[in-house]
Picture: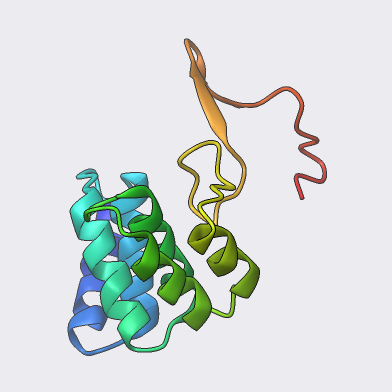
Amino acid sequence: MHREAVKWYEKLAKRGEEVAMYRLGECFRDDSSGKRSRRKSFLWYKRAAERGHKEAMAELGFCYQKGIGIKRDFSIAAEWYEKAGMHDRANRVRNGEDEFAFDVFPSHPIPYMEEVDGLIPFPEMDMDNPF
């Protein structure tokens, strides 16, 4: 099913649809396509962000902040966070404060650790209200 979704997102993305570009970034980030690729994820986020997609701007800032699919660059990360309207996060990045203890994308803020039987949330997190 995910591969079929990727196929349709790619068709829409080629027509300039920024939401499809953003979704492709998610698909390649999360391995929904069956072909996880940090570089492709970064590139699709970049295309969507350049067309004004706010969530893609935040994800792109995170990619630059953590060096996901691109060389780490804090000044560019801060610029994308600013464009996404995330001024506090942009200031923290400029000041060298790294609020992410784990490589967790902003749109998916719940960190996970791997166990033998699959992915489980950290025990200290309230899963009924993770925020």
